[in-house]
Length: 633
Image (cartoon, rainbow, N blue to C red; front, side):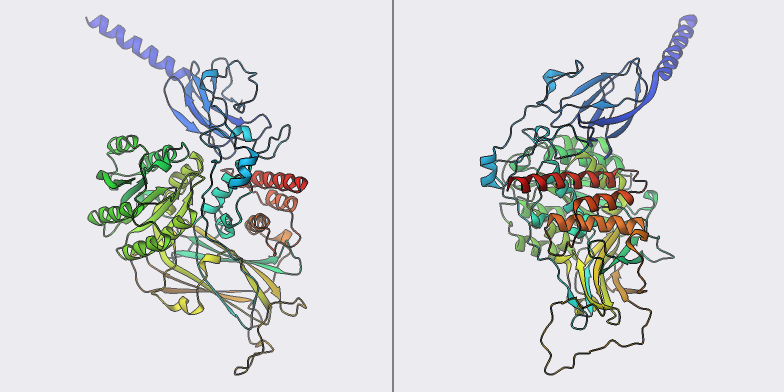
């Protein structure tokens, strides 16, 4: 018996050693036939079920055995299975669109996805624009063949966006102060990406330039001492109008190590109504929630509230180390019924209050397409409900999903009024960015009610224009009023604002008011501040505070040539220029798509995650769409 035991142990050791010897890290890039990287591709080891997702550059890494097979799948592409045996650990794959002739015998025919297109006639009536096939180029419009039945633009379109009236120039004598609330939301950028990847130019009001700029990381100096954030500023010649200057103001919030973050009391508020059935809605919500659950610690707690025709608690507040229990509750979710969003919000706040952590992070995470149609449903009713509940110290994160019936205006309002942030999740990679890469900033607030007020010196400034932030403007007197709500900053978050400045002495005409009868308008600037272009003032409150604190910084009037500006300054300018082109802004000057690509490429930097490279690709797609539209007309 002893000999048999020894033999079994030896045999087990040999098997274990063999498996370890066969185990390798496989890595590579997934591309389409034109050479474009395909982000968000699920790469699965068929034998073990282990999986990963390609990043924005189409790159992946996964541990497998040499005898295993890798399965590559993505909506709109033919699923492909590749055997690792006999191949290098560098495995690059090309995925074919679902309607392209199959040339590779390894593609599994029975696992392809059918395609259905929106006719041009129907899309003209609904506002949906069909994609355009582009072949044989390194970039171009996302081919319409990439859009599957489940991901295509719907035959109807009831998407809602709040109207944006673009900021104009302000005469510095009549308006010396510019006051606004910060905005850490970045929903607009990923939503714009969704439009462009579908072969459509985005709706004008879907383009919020400040959210596009704030989607990206910038290397601002970290805060010193106990300050919650640092203030960064830079002045350069404006790239789209050489007669003007461009002022960048940036805030960098302090970073907190995950192990030092306070405990969380989270309530997932999930829309499971009938409008959430599409794969890019509830199934994507569930994938995003799984990622977040994997980041939870034992001292965190999670509850799940769902709403459809009625609202209900499907998981009581559960410790973060009971991941299996939480995952099982998520897996059981199915879509169906109408949308009682208001009732769901009330139950979520009630659940969060019952499990309130005084020294922790209390937050509701709402995932929806925003299509509320039962009970409290109007934007104003939602606003009053959330404003009332936010005083309890519960923050809000709003995640938008889907298309066709997407209600951006309601979700932005809920996030703004609920002391929270707002993101649009268009693919699994964006969910990973939100809940893995930016975990701290997404969930943990380091400062609330953050307001900026800039006072411009008329000795150097004739007029100025804030680029974006149209729905975040405040009255000047709101800056010192601690009762006025403003934006929140999470751990590690950055906020960037750009001002276009017309220098003093310029002969350029600007909008002016009539001469005042009872007050004297100053004709010349006071000469006492010869080295000050602008004073930046910031007010903020601690996450649990009620009284604001003040920070200030003075900016020199000395500007550098645009080519000598920092990479962050140049890249933010490229994003702003792109936003103005998408909006067909009257202030876009002489900048074009090629200029934006050139600027962005020169300022791309290391781009470890591939986000800046993806931006360049999107600019090229928009350029082609614009050209096609011009040629058609």
